[in-house]
Length: 243
Image 1 (cartoon, helix red, strand yellow):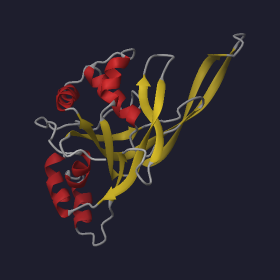
Image 2 (cartoon, rainbow, N blue to C red):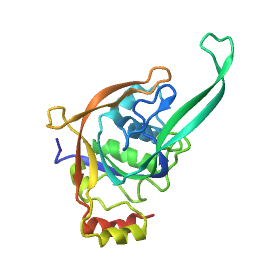
Image 3 (tube, helix red, strand yellow):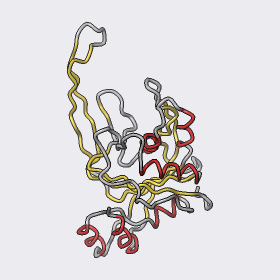
Image 4 (cartoon, rainbow, N blue to C red):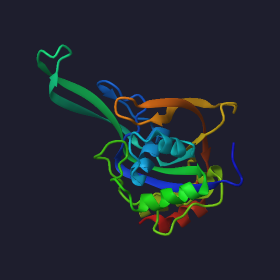
């Protein structure tokens, strides 16, 4: 469901490696093929300097609606991580634990937050000068470029309109030229938060309730999978965003 009077803020999520886990427990750490609600809210919370135990501030951010456009599909990769001297269950010794950690390589996303204008203005200011260092799922996975242009502010439009019109974020001149000349241009995949009554809605268990240590809690939300056309205007306009 779109809101014609909503405000929206579009973020560029670009990095060599990103991880957006939704079932990251035990020795296997997964990643979704696009950013999760918990991951994007956590990113914004870090920019604002919100403490992990501040559930009220987290709830305010979690009320924002999230829409994702996949401007470049990433490649799923797997990393083996070894941790030595891990205490055994009974505490009588130590062991070595090998875990599998999945991540996306060379992915590029447009993440749109829709909701309260003053809150989005605070988010925009914080993302430009973050309180804590920003990362995409893991501390080592830092942005390849700024999430916002220096002058960018929330826009008076809904998330669906941003997905359908925002300039393409691809920075490579060669890729842009190839796509501009491609006769059968592929559409861009989208994942948009929606009411549970929408036909085709899918459940995602990534609505954050608390990031507190030892008490991380999440609820379910629903999203709709779709796509938008990659137009000539989006390709041309995006050349000014390759900063």
